[in-house]
Image (tube, rainbow, N blue to C red; front, side, top):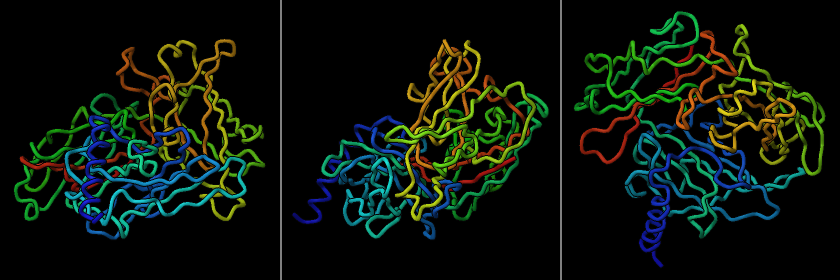
Length: 425
């Protein structure tokens, strides 16, 4: 079978897969009970956004673990997405330079000397087999070999043209309160009119703003407050006012012999270690206390090993929260990259009426973690989540704000990503 025929077969399979994902908003994380610790690191740095430059010079390391005694054979495909992370109608030939897709994950290593057996998978992107040819949002979809419908994990990343530049500031002096419970952004987006001759910011730009990369509270800006030559300015926008929140709670489990930061005790119950975290309590009535955090991220880290990727242990993190029983009906959710920022029954805290406490256990890999507790603001299932009930809101909180500038002129088939920036207090 020649290469053209193989590409046609792949295209048919990809269309079927994309059809099954149609209208789904994709995000980085596991889609299978045996897949854990899905990460997308830009140039190996866990604190950076998963963004590479279309012109080259940067790369991504995409990795995950599969919990199993025998190695499964895993392939991956890549789809282009619109600004809202839904697969668009670009085919691989429209957005990628590739030799053959799906591609096999070649870098696989078994865990070594761990109680729980797993296989560690890694993909570098771009690589010799595939690289992007257009900007925008991309999702790498992992599946069992010859089973493209068996979705195991999704790794989302962005390719930027570096043609839009964002400046601005974050302030506790907002249009709804002064040095109290909110933060407000003022920002401007500049571009070269010579390189983007026909850009009309009022109709062509889509600007997404996130606080600490949280999907649940992201804001879309459709129109700038005012415009100048080659510049769109956003100020006094209600959409740019966010709850200030609080510093992220954190804990570290890097040495199974000793409890780390935020851990009360460690016990081994075959076949796993259990890390019992210090009992949390509500902080919404406390004064602000600064603590250095990772803005919801986590870093895999283990002491006394040569290779953290394959020698770090998996453990069960046992969370306990002392909060009012009245919140049980609304629901309290454990949020952070440790739960892929998913808000559903899998991340809802379980309330023990007898103990008067909320509980949750999560299987994690050794490392340093951030988390917080969010509660729906209203009674509707679509109510936004708030920090007010458990974490509290303090204007001093050192949040990060991510800004993504998308460009889709009239008649275009996809959303270009002109630039990405991070602002902080």
